[in-house]
Length: 430
Image 1 (cartoon, rainbow, N blue to C red):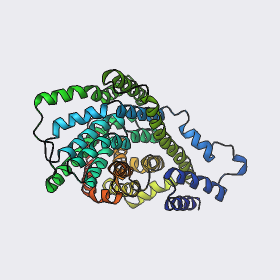
Image 2: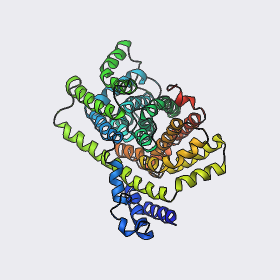
Image 3: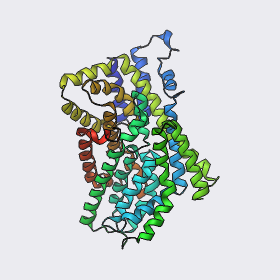
Image 4: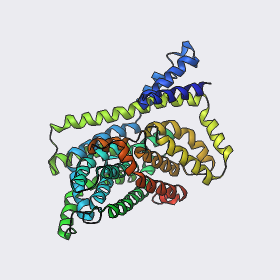
């Protein structure tokens, strides 16, 4: 009864176009009131929704990585790093068929390995590359779709904010998740580039001319080195035992400031309020979702939904191959409607027991879940990346969706490969 009311209210709020975080929070609080789930005398207990929301984000050391990675991404965007990465990508692939599309994918790959955020990648690289593609004869819908599909690599490659959330909610190693995401992220990028080349040949989209001279490539690479060192520092520090993922986020902020102020010299003191404002807004959105989703998950736990769902899945099949297929379909559908962090907080603790029961590695499942929900960022109706690129390109969402189907198909094919070949995710860990 409680569960039915909870999900009916949640669905009604979504249908009414209430923002996802508010939908979760309102459904949780109203369910408590309607069902009298908690007695009046326990109004001040830790089980109450509001108290639980604060407890979810208060004093959590791993979650502190999120605001610092947000600040680091904003610093990179304003400090000239994205511009250098685009120049390097241009020198490497800009002369090929669909050169500007390939630059977009490669630059997004570089930027994603530093920001950990899909919308940040879409905004930082898209602001440069979408106008450049349109100026050089690429259709606006194709340009926007290419950028949208390139950007969700940002939550697959380390440092991924979604992986931080998954690690916090399930107790798995965030550092191991970071390493496990490297090869899947590169495969997604490769699939996106293949589609970009095929479509560019079909539509006659060319690059910017002759291949860059070796000297020009070396210069572009030299200028991009300070930006490209950041992910190396983060991963080396985590796996060398020098600092935790949260401390790595702090290091990323300090390093970004040093590069922006003293190496590229494009970051000024006047920029810092804007950087902090942008990072604060993004952090507030993510943290609010984590808070309300945590309260939501308490009701599910009280109703033993995780245990029941695990038993249901195991009752359907005890075959890991079939279970993973069911989970993929379910996560792809939910990813199209739920914000990714909220989906992880609600679903990861529920699904993990069934996954472990069948001997599936929790790190491997974490990568599967993150990739599924990352694909949701370019899938209507919620698809955050679609809205970001639509705003930049001034193109209706519907046109971008129509131009995005081939990219979406390529991503799903890579997802299937990642799902059924665990060594792709676990190879570097071994």
